[in-house]
Image (tube, rainbow, N blue to C red):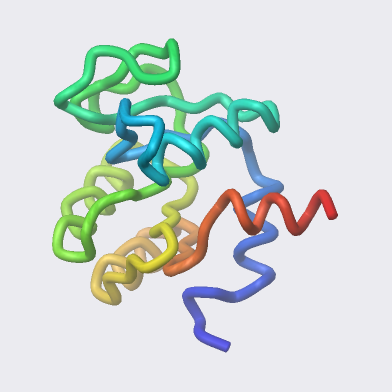
Length: 137
C-alpha cells in the first residue's frame, strides 16, 4: 500500500467534511471532473467549482482560484495534470483547507509531501467518487 492511498486517510477525508472545492471542474458533461462533481452533489456534498475559464458550472458560481472561494474548504479535489498540482496544493495550504485529493491518475509526490508537512490530509491517484461509492455499498 502506498502512503498516499492509505485507507485510513481516505476514510478520514471522506468523513471529515462535505465542502469540496473542485479545481479544474469542467462545464463539459463528458469530462470526468463534471461527472464526479455531479455525483458528489447528488450525495449531498457542497461542491465549489474552481475554474478561471467558467463563470458557472453545475448551476454553481465558479471561482478563478482557491483564494477567491468564500468560507472554509474541507477538501480540495484536484483535476489538473501532475505538473500543475504543486501550486494548487500551496494555495490549499494558504487558505487553510483541511485536505487535498489528487484524482485518479494524478500524483505529485512533492505536493503530497508539502500538504502533509503543513498538516493537511492528503490522498492521490484515487477517485473520490469511487471511494465514496465504496462506503455506500
